[in-house]
Image 1 (cartoon, rainbow over the protein chains, first blue to last red):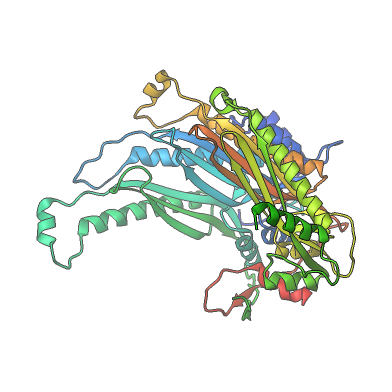
Image 2 (image 1 turned 120 degrees about the vertical axis):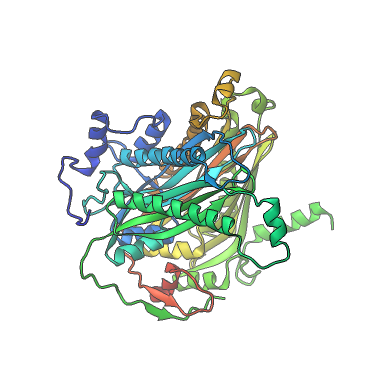
Length: 293
Length: 274
């Protein structure tokens, strides 16, 4: 998606889009009826004045308005997921593909539901997306994956949906979103890559040989290196699939969740963007000395 | 002095109001915020509070499955009552609205406690106007919002309490070692979140808001039963007062402070209201 022309491929007028999509059965299944009811209350209908809800701060709200978007509603998706078990070899570094798959699938389920809610509202995109993982005392080997954000719609009628026809998602704050739009870029989607990796323990011989010495530990270095590379490559692949020209605001998170010291999830997350205007000049920033403490 | 005397004295001081020649304004606003408010013709009057405790019937946590309606109803009642008290105190001290309201929600086995504390504000030089709003937005947010043509109306809050369903032994056994979603749990918590947000929306609609900004979704455990989860959604209902949204024009700035900060639109505040 390199131009931002209005889309005329039958998706038609924004207000009618969700109804048409529901009729055509194109909405992902599984959005609970209560969610539909809440979203329906947000929309303007004859005899019913809609409203918007948003977890954006006032600053963010005004900046989103300034770039020509209007918030439609706070949207979310979640999935409580039971993580499988995979045996690990004490002395072997390896990716735990079953757990990687679980972390992917559970996040994807949450994000798809958030997308479905945004589509229901006829949104062009979702900004300020946060992905969280919760653990509850009552669930062993289970985790809740949540995606929340604010669905927005362009006020000038242009469609900002990505080439897959879905609302774009972005974990950028309202401020970052504003700056991004000033520079002639549009977000395409939140992209992620994850890799759950088991890092081999050191052998007794190695531990003894290295005792008291300054040495690099090649097996640790290599394992961590490879896991990070795998996560980042997967993220880049997702961005390529969206036809992005770059990924901004990339974060690399490392968490052991509930697997103990030697098993780590490497998660890289960022917003895929497309450069839409050739020869766009970026406004010169003003330098200030603030009087805040 | 006994606690009872102290309370009586405080109540006496409150009912005295901040009449000219009386005590000065009390507020928890920062100097920046106070100056900013003055710059747009408002001033702080006094700190005001509203507290309400509602009881929850005995045994609801233990004997309910799914949503605990009694607790959500108690929450709604407590919020309304606390907001009413806050509004009463604000009117008593001659304020027009309450800004920067801190909302504390405590849920225990037998009660829901809501505490609201904020700063009453009024237009400078106009002593008695009607009551207009309660908001958890800061003075800074208030100035920005009103400059863009929007006006706060009140706190919109909604809560939902749910008892997480148990898995049957058969389900538990079949899921061991598998990667799989747990549909009944997912649905129960999903519905609880949606329920909290829906109630918040209804609260917003009842004050004829055009939208609710700065929504915070809080989650946690309620009661001593670990399976009981609470979801609370709180935001400020806003209304477009000027005919249409007034576009603020931000400028990109690079702060030269030692502390490296991200781009922050609050640095704009000098541009119009100095």
